[in-house]
Image 1 (cartoon, rainbow, N blue to C red):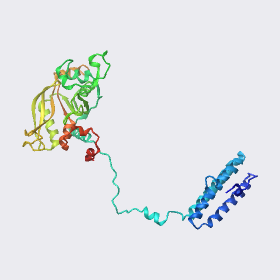
Image 2 (cartoon, rainbow, N blue to C red):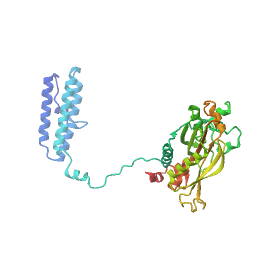
Image 3 (cartoon, rainbow, N blue to C red):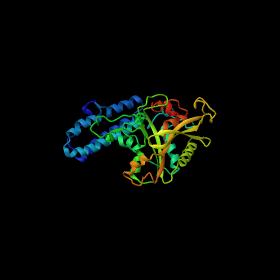
Image 4 (cartoon, helix red, strand yellow):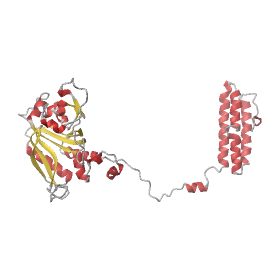
Length: 368
């Protein structure tokens, strides 16, 4: 293939360009009409579309470069039309589409089951947390949220953990570094419970208050089968006039039945929490053996599940600093808190709390 196949253009007006490209188009049609074998088709393709010596490449090299600026657009339009003609002729010569064998190879049996698309699903912790919240939402509780990085005041002091109190040792946590110049109450730390949201809520609105507070918390706990330094809580707060311990017992008994079934029983034992007085631990009848005694309930028939109590008047006194309506002489309330992982482990029969955080798809796919 040489430049002899491409005539030299001496004129670049529309008439001259039309004649030159019409001649080339006719040559392409004549050559395509004689194609009969795959070798001939490939030879035709190389003759016209070859990257080095193809006719279209020669036209681009000689005609487009030699054309004056005002003629380049006219020439380019005709060049594109010729290129499309050659490509169409090649498609027609090849049969206009894939062969029967190629079509058969790509055939799809529409009677076979379709490919299943993997869809996302809630993590078991998220699912359990939402289920707990929905139980209390049905009782008229709203949802409270707050920061995970809290001040010492909201996490400890306002919850009746004064500086130096031994109860702080049970909720040791990570403290943000380089805060020595700040007052103790203003130092930042990772919250050890969602209780700070209780105080923030009371400071922002007068009673009555009914909220549940789901969220992530942090404590300096050694990791084992049932403990993790990071876990999730759902706490609740109910404040109004004439709220009694009977209201607390009825609320939690209803919630446990909603979560674990109507046959579940609850019982309360005296306990201690700095922010409630009196305080209690709540046990439920073993959901695995029905209270008869088994390995999971240590043959007792009962499983300890959460803590609760009547809000300590000292906590109301902190809230009254910004909301005078929280006068402990006029109002009362109860609070409770439960670990989401513990409930999820019971509901789904999980023995290692670390499985929730390992990211093992084999474990998580069970909950899809």
